[in-house]
Length: 401
Image (tube, rainbow, N blue to C red):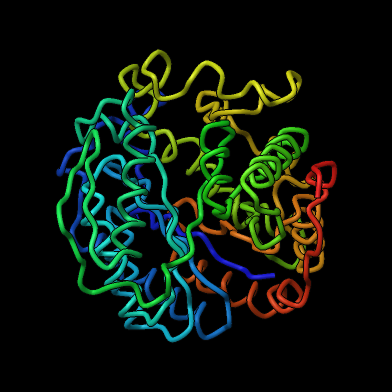
């Protein structure tokens, strides 16, 4: 398997002391911002990525978020370009550029630059973003899906055609030939995060893109993977474990109790404070905006639909007992090296994924703790994962060959 570490790059200072009632104020003004903390946060995470490169991790997962200490990666393309100069083999899995919010030609150019500077180490993920970010950029949420698909069409044309023109609903171009062009030919691999909507799965199946799927409860995951396999088949493609990336959480310690003691404060800070910042306000809710269609989850078995979407209010109430339950159920891979490796392999086999994307620092973890976790995982877990090959996609085996 290939193993990637996902890094949200959260601002390196905790903000729980600024909560009003149970929420962190949004927006969080500049009086709460320290430029030295921000500069140190970037440098420390780059040092961690250098360590991943030295230890043989396959890549680091980057993302794009705005107006919150949840993550300081406003531009994953800029982060990849900087990190490419400090690493030799590490790939950069973009999850992803929020293409409905930006000029797609600019994204195509920036990714081509980063791919060239890294000599082909870009895995280009495209995403739609959370509703809050549409308010930030003044883009109607009702246009999200159409903008997303149009933007990716433009990016692919810019990458693959010597010269292209495009007349779209949102963007138009005439006689464009980008310089530089992607180092990877015909273009960097495209990965798409799945959260359950049928439209995204159908679109990815049409284009034969790869999927990044979180560790939903098992019935929902099976429904998503099975539907993806059907869409690939309908478009003349066949699903393989290389299409699949299993996105989950892991933390390695000498045993489960130590893992809980070390990591739970950071995990709880993330789920109780950071993850919801700016996303609980009424204006940031997707209901009734056209962001999702009413039929998006019709393909999912009724008993599994409860797992679709993000229950932010519920997540904010997460307790230590909830964490212990998630570990016992296998949803979180926290514990000894053997426990972590066993659970990650079991999850990857269940999903049929030969790629792993692992969260191990979600809540402004201290630099020395994150660095030690990377080293511990790289020494005690990574070799076993990389030696394992997933060879089948169980949920797809009822789909015609």
